[in-house]
Amino acid sequence: MMMQTDTAIQDRSRARQRLSPQERERQIVDGAIAFFAEVGLSGQTRELAQRLGVTQPLIYRYFPTKQDLIDRVYEEVFVGRWRASWTDLIADRSRPLRERLIEFYGIYARDVLSYEWIRIYMFAGLAGEDINRRYIALLEDRLLRPIVTEVRDAADALGTDAAPITGLEIEAAWHIHAAVFYYFVRKHIYRAKTEPDLDEFIADAVDRTLYGAIEVTQRELG
Amino acid sequence: MMMQTDTAIQDRSRARQRLSPQERERQIVDGAIAFFAEVGLSGQTRELAQRLGVTQPLIYRYFPTKQDLIDRVYEEVFVGRWRASWTDLIADRSRPLRERLIEFYGIYARDVLSYEWIRIYMFAGLAGEDINRRYIALLEDRLLRPIVTEVRDAADALGTDAAPITGLEIEAAWHIHAAVFYYFVRKHIYRAKTEPDLDEFIADAVDRTLYGAIEVTQRELG
DNA sequence: ATTGTTATTTATCATTCGATAAATCCGGAG
DNA sequence: CTCCGGATTTATCGAATGATAAATAACAAT
Image (cartoon, rainbow over all chains, first blue to last red; front, side, top):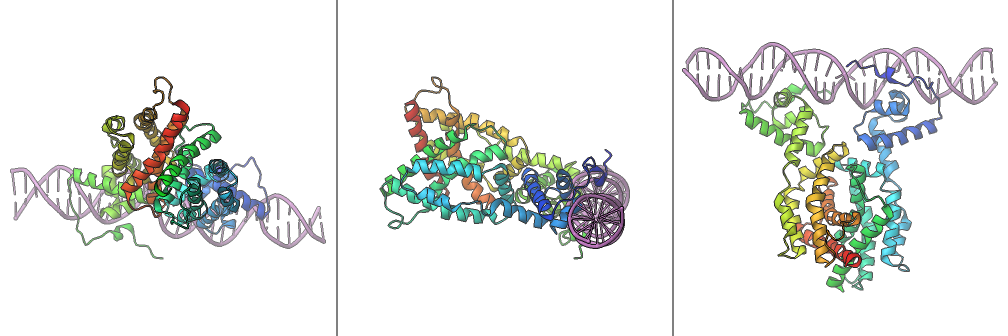
């Protein structure tokens, strides 16, 4: 089977290229995001280096350990992606709730639910990282509860002050979210065929899942 | 850091135990399912052996390679879990569709969406296995299309012969499925808090997601 | 052109990990 | 109780992998 040594694998056609530390670090982080998203966080530093066109020890000049690199990837991918304006968008009663949700999920799908994000997110969850629980807490606070509040309003039901939000109402907001999220799980994790028109899918998904949320709320709290 | 050799790690308090090949194989497979579900398919054979209370080479007497063991795990976990009767249950028009779906997902959640199943399923998906795509094809054929057919009927809409099932209708059936599936993703993969009463959750989830499916179908094909 | 800084590579170490061969010893047959 | 098949362990190999130290060379300053 004759393996070459890892140094021999390096692409010598492109000569040693000396970048500024900032540029090289940026390149390593970006490469690591793409690499780990594809093969998982157990991907090997040698293979990452090969894809970057540099040698493996160079990575260790910029990140003391592999875990430090992974932590940096987490930070780049997950931290600061949520926009505070999204919560305002959900709460903007000058427009129909349906319209707000469709716009929000259109943005969210493109800005957050990327190939890299959803795969690294799932890898992290399976690895037992607490990133996912923290992200869920953030979503519940800034997205799901606001949605429940708006659903109450749309259903002409009691306000969330008069009747506290129930667990099932939060779950109902998760249903809307799950419809969109699961679409990307099928697309980016299972690599299965999905409805090609994203905007049409989102509009339809919001339509169908929002209906039941409002209907059941009306029935129980109207 | 002084590592002991792996042989020294073995638990000697329990003497060498000689089982019949059938028993031992069963034990290894069951242990591998639990082990790989927890740590992923890249989990090490030495650690698996340690959990089983046997030595690592013993595993290789029963499975020539680690991949053979993984394939066996896939087979045990995924093959034959689907019951043909479930498709009949969905199509049984002597009962309200809502009731059928609630019963189905109650069974499906307990029989299929276990800790082991959903984690190994996700690990396999991320690893690029085609198991997931095959399973999705099975679901679409035996669950989603039957559900769409029943939703059409419940909405007094055109039959699936008169008007072929659209991509968005399949997606709508996915919404119902996603609501339940995502609940278990949050529970078993993110290890997040979820609604404690499973039956109540399922009934509510079916209620809310089915509403929109019927409503939109009625509007478009009624 | 020469030199100094330091980004990058070469060479290598210590473990880890899948896998194999040989030794050991449990438990049933006689 | 003795013996034998084979289940199980001991010992070990070779490649892979994270990490480190020393050598090299690209580029800027002079």
